[in-house]
Length: 280
Image (cartoon, rainbow, N blue to C red; front, side, top):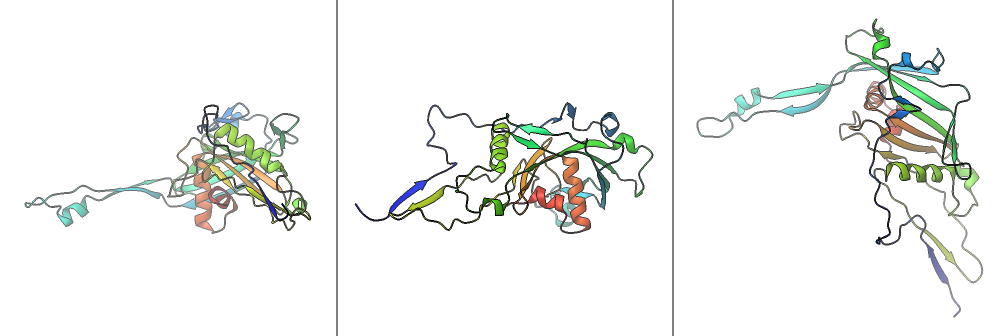
């Protein structure tokens, strides 16, 4: 029969669950990187260069964590307003001076996957966080004892938006490969969604006019509603700049989240904070 034939190609959507479906992967945070665990002192990383790639600092007041009160009842059994108000207690966390320093070993890289479909990560950047609350902006005498391993920034190159123009919708990018491997290792991220691709075929030819690909920023175990820090040992973030094709996999401990929070509160628009909290 002549006419328009519509073919729906649903890519990335799992079939209806059956007995053979793989069990859901539960998120287990990375414990560190390359044999080093979170919280190790910077002084124990003997292979890193003496000079950092960069250093950032920010200062904030302690952040309110919780507000508690006790109902003090009056003679009629009701909560007495003033006595209950006097029982109000606020608890705080963090605050003070935060410093982040980053280091990289020249030429060092890593790989997600095997030689056939793996993605090269380069450069790989080690991050160290220090925090003190003495009221002094200068580094304290015990700085080496509080400067600890708090994150990893793993970079990779994917296709830019311009390079993807004209390629079929099902074309697998480096970003797609990294996302697939992260989902396999850590499970599905927060707000994870894979959308199907609709291709309309006519008697003349396949429909053109393909829209630009969209790349979301995904996060595993993000911060809670306070935005101060993650409640996990470490979170994972995947982000891509579609204009350049530069991608980032970020391992972030609570200390790194707190630094980003402090930077954002000092000056709006901090890049690290935006990456950690980006929804798209």
